Image 1: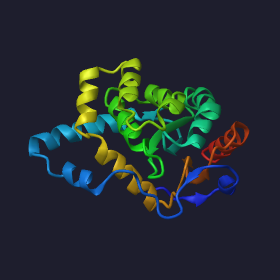
Image 2: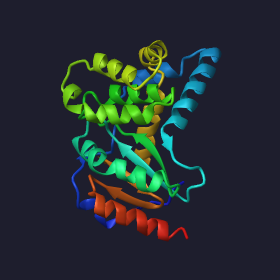
Image 3: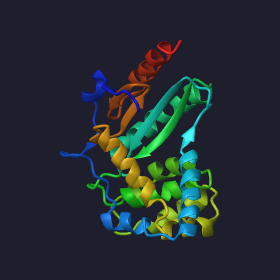
Length: 227
């Protein structure tokens, strides 16, 4: 388990947050439904979940430093960080083998479409297209965040990033990723996360839409500690 400490930048930047322990938008009934599967379907579900879990990891397995991104696709500050910082982090640290990154879902209850967005993203992750869907969801956030039902946009985005449409629809319609999204929310709740975006950089915790210069400095400091 990560040894987490609060980084001094955590209070300095804006973030989407809940006043009490973080809760995902997923319902208890949906969780119960995922546990009622037959043995055969449970095996299929485990296979899908394993593929989805691998798909949301990016970087060299030999990298000495992990960055875990805790995010909500409907959170405006998550989008801000993604738009201003993410691509540079991938280019300068992930592509060069210095850093490995993983995405963890925290769809806040205050964001009505965050849960279906997370499930859509994880269903594309099964087919190895998570990071492309990550880009697409943040890029189009203004188009779907207030819709009563964003399914058609999510379906279109999934096809645009290259997934097999039938397999994707089957994944979404069966709520195959609901258990994973709920497990993500429980894990970060146990770690005391109350806001998005939150980052675990090695054993350092950072919060909010941290600007690139500060984020780069934090990575460089953490990398120096791995030498």
